[in-house]
Amino acid sequence: MNTVSKRMKLGHPTVEDLMTRDPIVVERGSTLREVAELLDEHEVSGLPVVDDQLRLVGVVSRTDLLRRLLEGPAEARHDEEWLDLLMADSTTKVDIDAARLGVVDDVMTGEPITAFADEKLAAVARRMAEEKVHRIVVIDAQRRPIGIVTTLDLLAVFPH
Image 1 (cartoon, helix red, strand yellow):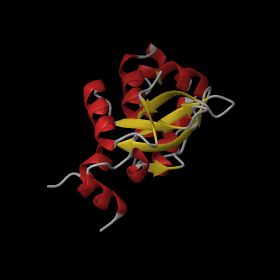
Image 2 (image 1 turned 135 degrees about the vertical axis):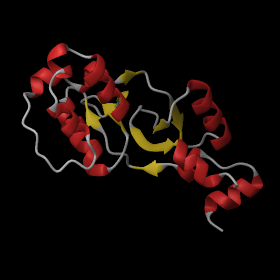
Image 3 (image 1 turned 180 degrees about the horizontal axis):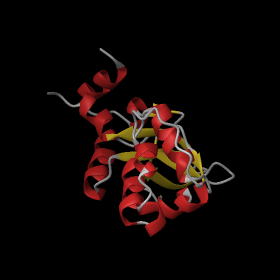
Image 4 (image 1 turned 180 degrees about the vertical axis):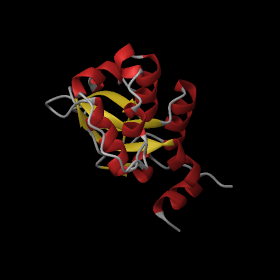
């Protein structure tokens, strides 16, 4: 029985028991092309956004990029190659003017929902459900991302 299962039996698993450590992050000011490439390369659906001090300032997801495509500036909406850029299985290298697409700051969710490693997992799961988010960034005292917990992570620890 793993640590999470043991603590689950005891009724007090923490975020630290489940989180994916050392999350991939993207820096504020990164182009949406860079964001899409990171999402694709690491096969994740969202990333914490950090400032130059590596403090959490937002979260960006594939959904944010798609929303930008559908609702964003007309020049980005009408660029069909944008879809290739967002496709996880795309093998086509797309050459698009990055300035036209914008930067992560334009689409990220600011003030993301966060947790600390020592919080009870059940409380964080409730907060995720209440806030309708699919990922929560685990931060340290300086607001630096140290982990991520997703809804899929939570599904893995609850009995079927």
